[in-house]
Amino acid sequence: MSDPTSIPFQDQYLDARADCWGCGRNNPNGLYIKSHWEGDEAVAHFTPQPYHTGHKGVLNGGIIATLMDCHCMGLAMAYAHRAEGRAIGSQPLITYVTASLKLDYLKPTPLTDQPVELRARVANIDGRKTAMTCSLFAQGEETARGEVLGIRIVEPPSLA
Amino acid sequence: MSDPTSIPFQDQYLDARADCWGCGRNNPNGLYIKSHWEGDEAVAHFTPQPYHTGHKGVLNGGIIATLMDCHCMGLAMAYAHRAEGRAIGSQPLITYVTASLKLDYLKPTPLTDQPVELRARVANIDGRKTAMTCSLFAQGEETARGEVLGIRIVEPPSLA
View 1: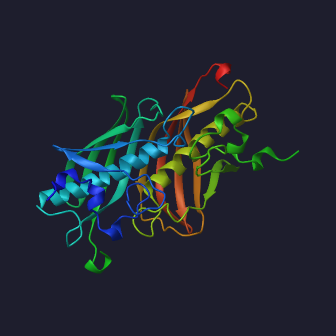
View 2: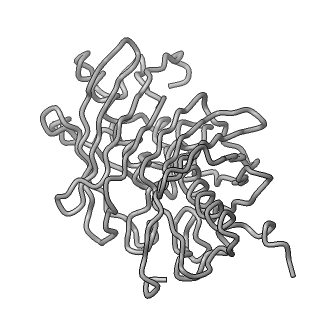
View 3: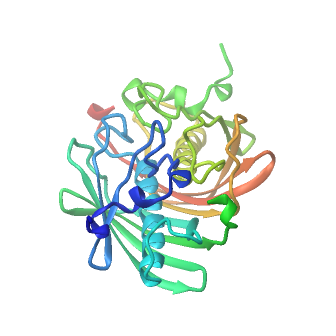
């Protein structure tokens, strides 16, 4: 049996939950963000397409926002499952939605054919709210920093 | 001669500045956001693709962030040009970059084949900083609200 920690969070989502443009494996035209644990940090690497540009030569800020949003929602879900000793996708379903996204663009993120790196961790849990911090690194340098708030949603099993 | 206020801001950018994935007319695979003045508000309508999904049936939060980012940078540029009585794209070039993006997702934004509407206005100007507020409406209801800070950048004419 493969080590579940080596399978990206998003590849453990149920098929019915894998449509997201940012991170769903079943989206026909998405970014396919893949996040995994490294200790208590969630880490993802994303290789942008040449058309993911903002200003010339710079990675688009909306793409950066999408990466942080999906990466952090993956972290919120993975964290909740780990805390409860459950597999991602097990019933009853644990899902999160984004309540807020606060992003500081510290400097331009160079757009190259090399992957950027996202590193996020849980900063605080307050009931259904999971507050996270996330940094984006390009060529080892932090270029953007975010605070992302996820809310756990309760769904009837029929929606799973 | 056509009324310049009826031409979307983004269609007045120089060709060398029209690559952006969110709003550049020359991007091969972008969102092609188009913003225009309605009084002191910048308004844009965007019809999402079916694959711009987050949770099933809901517009992706990263797409919303991109719309707000590009719409507000368009507003910052248009506002600066209007204040100086100049045409967008005239020399010396006025350009803005996003310093921060703070977004609250108030409720799920339904993903339909109908356009969503963005309305933004300048809240404050402080030197090179333009602070803006932006709301997203779906079917007339406000579903997301953002605060976006743009910074005017000074570029040598050779970069224009």
